Length: 89
Image (cartoon, rainbow, N blue to C red; front, side, top):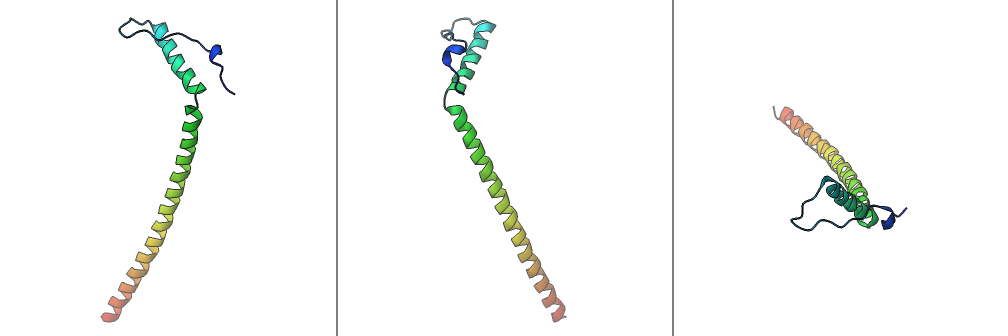
């Protein structure tokens, strides 16, 4: 559902150096929110966040798998060294 720009509050931002009231500051904030929602940046940011989450999950899974394989390798090496040391005595 796209937001129509004429349905939200419109006001021009105050000029530089011009005093602003609380209402004008709130209106400026609403304008920024409206512009973000109407523009394509919002959905794009969500898509990038989802892709980033998937990449992080894949990286954690790969690191976990590599860690398990490394542990197996070190355990095998440790057992071999222990057996060799017992046989040398």
